[in-house]
Amino acid sequence: MAVAPALNEAPGFAAQTDVANAVMAYLGRLRDERRASRHTLDGYTRDLTVFLAFLADHLDEAPDLAALGKLEPADFRAFLARRRNDGLAASSNARTLSALRGFFRFLSREKLAENAHAIALRGPKLPKPVPKALTAEDAAATLDLDDDKPWIEARDRAVIALLYGAGLRIDEALSLNMDALPLGETLRIVGKGRKARDVPLLNEVRAEIDAYLKLRPSVGGKTAPIFLGARGGRLRAELIQKRLRQLRVELGLPDTATPHALRHSFATHLLGSGADLRAIQELLGHASLSTTQRYTAVDAERLLDIHAKAHPRGR
Image 1: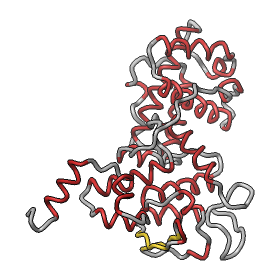
Image 2: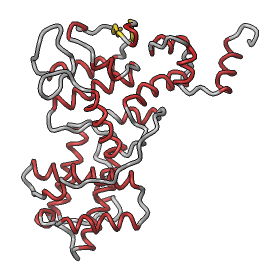
Image 3: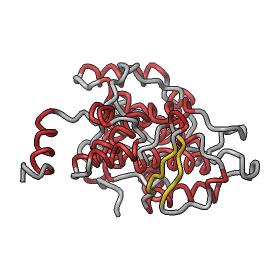
Image 4: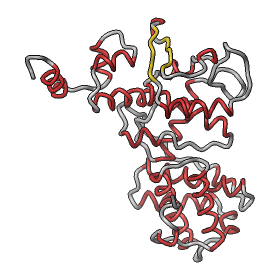
């Protein structure tokens, strides 16, 4: 898959050859090592193109790497002011800042340019999200992670895969210990009220967990947590919540992309594909069907349609 779109095809792209090559290398790394989606690559290409076009106008010449290293906070503030004047939404502006931070971190790691001001950029505070289901595309995009430590990136991908691919609560995923291994087609989960249930595991979910286990530090025995924090203890839910907040900005996802929303999306997408409410109830570990109905936001029309198709008198 080619990096998309090619820079010479991106409208308004303006930069010296060394910067163009660096942008291509950065996008290539996102694609090859971070497995970024086409959606992410398109968005980051647009963000960097707009920024470099602004600099060409702001500096009266297309920037080179040396110029990027000399940018001051006032230059970035001027860029943000231009974006606000253009009517860019706060969430889109925040994503653009994330693209810039990622690019300048790449320049620093590759010893191409150093600019601490760019890496310290902070975007606008976004309104507190209201949990609701994501689209299937947005839910899948939450796996587009970027971390300097490969094992932490793999860990977070595995946790997110369990939330969306198996419908686990965040605390259920993080409570798993090494004695749950090796993974089979189902995973025994102990949920609220110490109620146990067997959750099917998709091949893709098992693959993400296996990829993490290959990189996981060797800490503890069978009773040790599967998902470790950076210091070797059990991973805390707040860190996954923080990771998803970062992803909302980096990928331009809706403010509702939370750990709870991924579980919610799991149930909603199953229902939308024709799954039985009772089956979803069992998968989620709900004590009553009424809880499942509220959780999946099933409206009266949808329930009537299910009833008409399922009831013997309705057929």
